[in-house]
Image 1: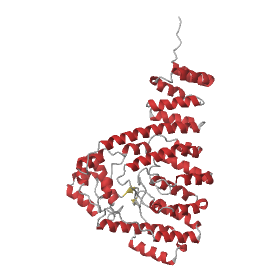
Image 2: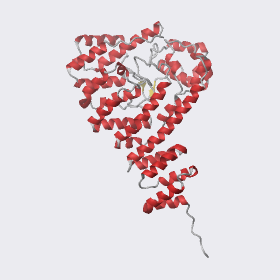
Image 3: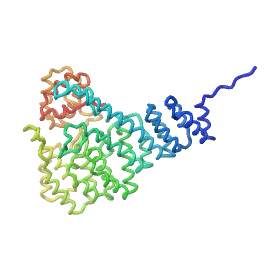
Image 4: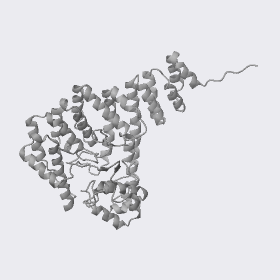
Length: 463
């Protein structure tokens, strides 16, 4: 009795043949499958087993990326596998993938903007809470659970990685900046503040997560370039340091702080080149990265550089925002004083002029908690004075009064209760509440005032 051999499909045959007839496999795929979108997934699966990716294969792969949706983990596998032997090819494919995703995100963002209700009424705020036009863009850049191998690729080829990914990252930041209400500029802050938040071990010790993989890879690429080739890093920084976006400026400050012996003079020029760089940080400490750069670099500064920096800090006096009420202006001026105090305190105490040392002591008495960001007890964060569930059950007037009791100037600490959080935690709880009842949240936002509701008004659900 005859037995039939099991049939092998074309994909299996091609996969096995890469090892001894790679050129012929490539020819067959390119000539027979490459023009057929229906076979794109078969083609991608076959390419996964290639020992070397040729220019013709790269061209076909980029066509597939443009016209067909390939599962994210399949894309990640291909990039990580190629990256071990052909890192520049992997970087090129990664750029093609991310550009397609960002383009789609910008299109979705534009659709959401076009659907926005007119005016500043309840319907507008309900829309802003439920359908933020920023969300599609931030989701692409901050995506978790994919691209976990990118840091190794960035470390292996830092400059090509930055050449490919930095323009893409700048495009994403620019798209977010275009959605900000005050696009004319801010004399105090860069655009896209507290968004696309890099995680730095020096500032985020004890945190549970390392940050989004794409942002982590960009960080590793620039750190590696700065450590391995100072000349090329300085040239790269000179070409990009005029970026108008807070995430970029914060990254520059972070990288300069890691090698103070090499970059102290450059750090001084960086800090004194734009006073908005005095306010680089995260939600936990609005000037945390700036102060870290000062603390790391200033011991290597000359006396003249110290004196020039102190003079610049003493002269730092940005005008209050024009829409602030009296309480808001007082809070703004206090914030400026705290920024000056933090930067002066980061300098070596023994090199401060006597007048500056006295000022630091006086201001520390005036603002005893100015050096504190988010506070922790044990392993848990100090939470909101009112939870999202309590907000759902509270009356409208009680919610408004809660924000009045803990206005914007009380960032992380309740003004009267030592173990309760401040306005930041309350605003985050409000954002969670807004996800469940966007219509009511929109109505409440109409009752917020500049002195106590600015952060709550801008809060959005966290993903």
